[in-house]
Image: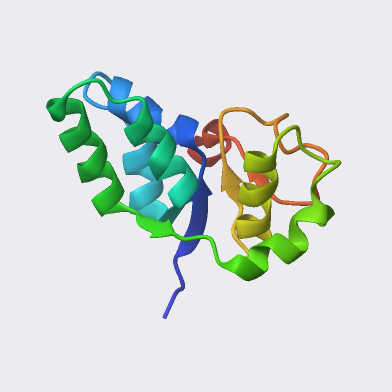
Length: 129
């Protein structure tokens, strides 16, 4: 039995689907067809924080129901120092810890955001070939 690929999606991938998903081939849909997609409670919170209407909240919740949303365990804080000087924010350090502990590659449009980490970073175009 072949194992499916697994991906940790940055907020930019999810928001791209919300903005462009109906207009063109969705990267999120492509990723979901290739493997199992995860995001974090941080990303889910970011998407919901910036909604402006009940309709937008509904769309965001549909996307979040289609992926697996990982929580933040208190022990993740013990690994924060591994990334504190490699990324620009606490949020990015926490996201990096989630990727590291769960052994998930990060999918993002911003290859430079995590460039100083040893994490595997995938630009969506690399998956499309």
